[in-house]
Length: 316
Length: 263
Image (cartoon, rainbow over all chains, first blue to last red; front, side, top):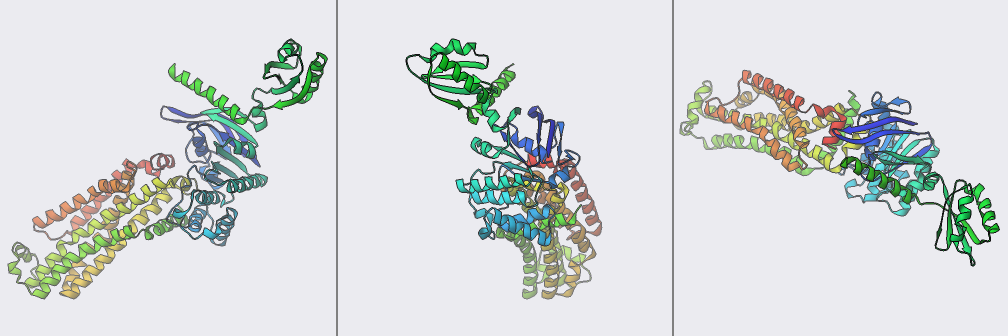
């Protein structure tokens, strides 16, 4: 479990991360989304015990950050943004080296190396120098390295970048099995589709967390759902606007391209009432569907607003 | 301090080094050249039976070897006079290896994954320092032994005794490892400021200037080699320089600083 309270990091006059608050439970995949320079890598480096926070505290599997950093590193696996492999060594030698740094020895080390060479599918290339590997193969070796010591907590920075679609899927499936094994996993990514598929909850970050929720709730944005009502017949959607304003469960409505877009809080409960009211008012409805914002829209809105705020703060 | 982890770092560094033939050549070649030149002169004098009185300025120095016949005294002077250059190997080679290692890691961005393991920074640095210093120490000691034995075999066993004197045995056992350590530290410090190994090595090569200056000064002052007191003084001076390098580079032992400066 990862518990973060008020965590922040300053580099001289630059505040890279501030006021982070979140908990990642056992068996949960937590995604961090954010633009370049949003503080994702700094956050992971702090949580991995690589750099000291300037403010706040965090507990990783019960170990206090800044006090038990060595223990934190022992229970943590990290896939860094760049694979950072030793090019002159083979894949097997790379893994063997890191296994020893994590305290594995003898048969235990050998078994772990063989297992994870197999898991990422590079057993056949295990005795080739990684300097000659493709980007995807290097990424696989780096993933194997992060898992070698069976860490309880895993940080994955862009885990499927440079991988082809089938390799990316196999890595995603494998990460999902790690969640099922009860590990706490943080995934930093720019890939919104991947975040949505893989993560149980997502934090959108720009210096601090701008939003944190499940992908479905994030897509809802302000908590309302937009219901699209397709109409036919002589009456234009604009003619129902007074009716919409009178319905207590409707928070907003607008006509668009011959349809009505109606915002309601609880589409499952409110839609039957909405349809009944429209039909009673003479509407001929051909379809009702819930329109969710894409995660991309939500992300761009949040990050854009935060960017404007930052710019105003700098200008002031 | 966990020897197992230092051993893991050392093993990885040695593997890396052994796969770099150019760097291995850079270790072996200067050592052999420094030994081969005086040995060649000794052999030349031996074969050509030169009259040492014809050796001009060197003839003045032969009085420093009153127990040796003139020809052997000339050979002894040559053998001892070149020995200061043995100190260039521990000055140059570890720095070349350390800068190559650190800048290689910097370019491959491989320091962060290592720092993310339970290894302590001091264990990582010690493993790297030993790996950078060991080839130079072994090369210097091997060439030193060969130098003494080969010159003794070419000319006279008394040359072997001159080489294996108390002064030079002390220098080999203390001054050589200390210079290696200083060289490694300077290599790491320089590597934090530049991004390519050649620039780092060029900046670091200034370390050899004092050694060459001492060797040349010794020649012109009529002293063919160091005295025991000078070796002890040299140990102290290098130890102080190591202390200063550690003060200047105290960040070397901080994970965050290494990540920021070298990562």
